[in-house]
Structures are given as structure tokens and as C-alpha cells.
Image 1 (spheres, rainbow, N blue to C red):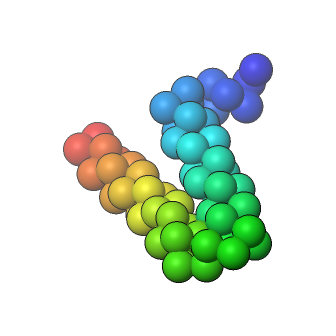
Image 2: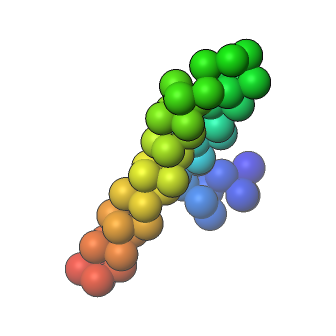
Length: 62
């Protein structure tokens, strides 16, 4: 529980979403939809980049 408080619930949900996106992208890629798998797989780094950007903005306001 201390881990969840340290990271924050919104960050934990965003990381879970990125993990689900990676799993779905791998499933699509390995099932034969290679282009769809690659397209969906690129969403995870994009969301992580947005998360980092928002953290930097929040840190700078303090």
C-alpha cells in the first residue's frame, strides 16, 4: 500500500494502461496483424512521454 501512495493512483493506472497496450500490441503482432500491432505498440511510449511531461510541469510549479 505504501508503494501505491508513493507512486500515486493516477500514475499507477497510467502504467497499467501502458502494460495492457503492450500486451494487446504483442497479441496483434503475433496473430498476423503486424501493422496493427506496431501501430498500437507505439501508443505506450507516447503515453509514457505524456506522463513524464506532466510530471515535469507539476514539478516546475512547486
